[in-house]
Amino acid sequence: MVTTRRPLPLNRRFALLLVAALLPALASGAEVLVLGSAHLAQLQPATTPVQQAAVVERLARFAPTRVCIEAVPGESVEAFAAEPARYGELLSTFAMNAVRLAGEQQVRRQRPAAQARIEAGSLVAQDTLDEMQRLTLVSLQLAAYEPWSAALNWSALSPATRESAAATLGQIAVERLDALAASDNEIASIALRLARQLGQRELCAVDPFADELGVSALADELLPRLSTPAVQQGLEALNDEQAKHWRADRPDGLLALLRWMNSDDYARADLAAEWAVFDNTAGKHDAGRRRLMLWHARNAEITTRLARELAREDGGRTLLLIGAAHRPFLQASLRALPWVDVVDGEALLAP
Image (cartoon, rainbow, N blue to C red):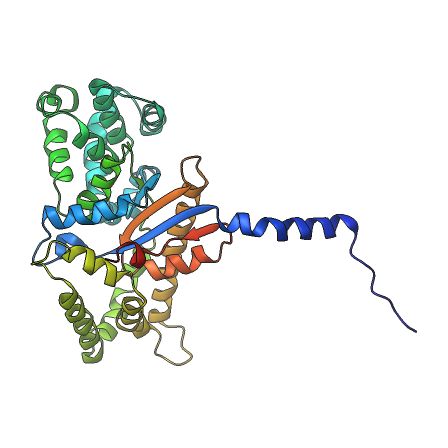
């Protein structure tokens, strides 16, 4: 008996043709730049304002509509703060400024964090803000557990407004905002300055760090493996290679360092030194491989939050500044999406 293959129903054929026709358009949709960075506060010798400005100038050519950072989102801080026994260590390590500064502003503005977040969003969306409105925005963002966005707007205020702001914010908040805005880490020296130059009023935080609690629970089992001479030599070799690329005497030294940290060469070296060491026990699902799963879980959470930023009306060109070890994993996930263009950071930073 000969069987004939039935043609696809008309509606299915139409759907397939439509998808095929749309793929080129989808592929040129949202743009995302995941820029891997050294943690600049740990870099020796320290970077200079000239070197930082060179990076900001180059990133401004991408003209991101959203600038995202490796920090705990305000909603997550709020949720974690409700369970101090479980999340206290995480908050003290990764979100201390958010916790320390929120309470006073919630009292001063008589707003819980959720309401402060809504009102801050309304101010962010306004076409223009005068000095007092921006100062109000600073207070609301602090109340919403978003200290880096508050520091961004604080840095955009006039010196006169900052000098008189203690009456509105309190002296502790003023001093801490000054310290945050002047910090030598990559959030303040690159992301904040870039967002301010582009006239933006918030930084989006995309890393809840929650999976680091699971990593901490594995510490006793992981320590013997990380203490072996082979692993230590591999990490030292990676650090030595980074030192070779950090030309602190050159105005473009930070550009050159970040260009290398966004290359395939760096990704291979970091994979061998930091991650392959956890996957070397044949057939055993031990603490090392569980640690890798937690690393992937953290990156998956960052990807999810980044996708939500890309889904925003103003998210069509989003930049994420993040530790360089994350970059290859995030890019691999994002490149699987045909409607997202992943911009090459190494090429953007090229001479």
